[in-house]
Length: 338
Image (cartoon, rainbow, N blue to C red; front, side, top):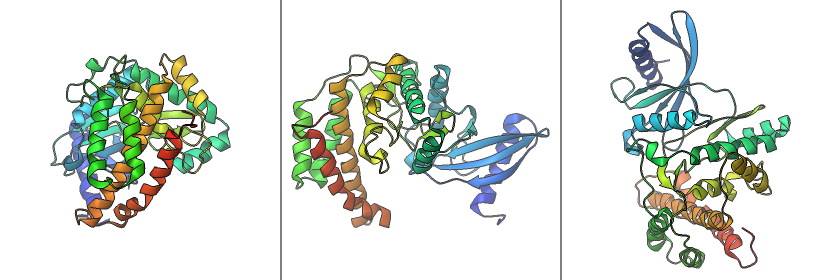
């Protein structure tokens, strides 16, 4: 490892920060950059202080893509954890960019799989997909039971009418980039006609609690990750519908939730833990989530074409817009089931 390379800089920075935080000299070993997410980088390592090793994970958050301050994310994670949602314990937060160049969180390491296809294989081998789905539903219900006013004020608010506001944001993108695609225009009219209004009970919502943001082992659900998109006063059915979209099934389309669970099993876990399932709102948010994903793909392709982000992955996103058109048509056709 180069003494001046990014790994060495991050390793030294984490050791210095944790030495200050723990009040004891910390040495770092088993340092490993994990697969980076769309916005953040995760680093697994072992920190040893006073002869005691501790497996940890640092989540580095570039300010340019920070959706909320790291202190707010830590606060909402600890709030969720206190209400029974499985979340890795926060060890420390750092806003000082002198250590690794960007703000970061340090959490306890949790064993298990996060890569979706590995999750599916793990659950198939263990035969515990149904139980894991119920645990997942229960975790979501416990999150939705929290008074959203208890979250840090710096956690963004979904607004007075989350559905109307989200629809307006996506409609603007469709009007700019997809105005010539008849299916998107049709889906917008479908959504506008059925706009559900404010939720009966606004909730604290994760917005991305799907396969890929879960840690799963042979024992079931171990933790929920990636809390940077959390919102206060959201519609709980947005959270329930999002993981049911086809792109989160990873080629296992017959299993609506994450490619390993049917809806009844997930909803049973959700309702047993106190959640209230609303089929009409669920269907609306499922169509809304699909339209939102299609608009996002169009934005990625546009960023490549206009030179903002020249990347083959961004370019390939444009080719997937037609997949979204199919999904939308299947969801809004008159004979469709929710």
